[in-house]
Length: 87
Image (cartoon, rainbow, N blue to C red; front, side):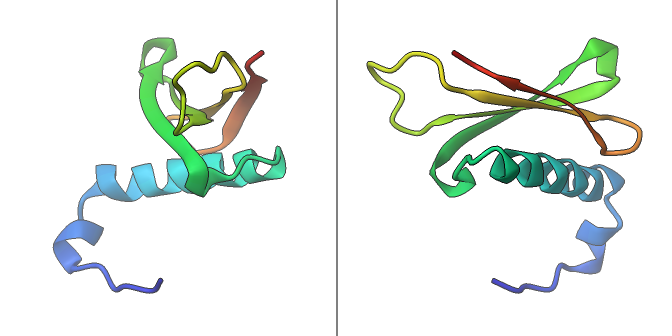
């Protein structure tokens, strides 16, 4: 899917940065075998705002425990810092 973004979106530094964070996290998740299209994805700040934590869990999470993948991405450079596997 290819779509051009309007200039006002491209001027929004936070939006562009989140796109970089998600691209880095998705790449790491796919390398770990996670189907990102079939994941419930949440993102939150961590480490006093120094990183973003992207969590990949199953969309069908009822009656399931564990198995999430957590990817920490640096808030300054959008580089993957850590990948954690849930049990």
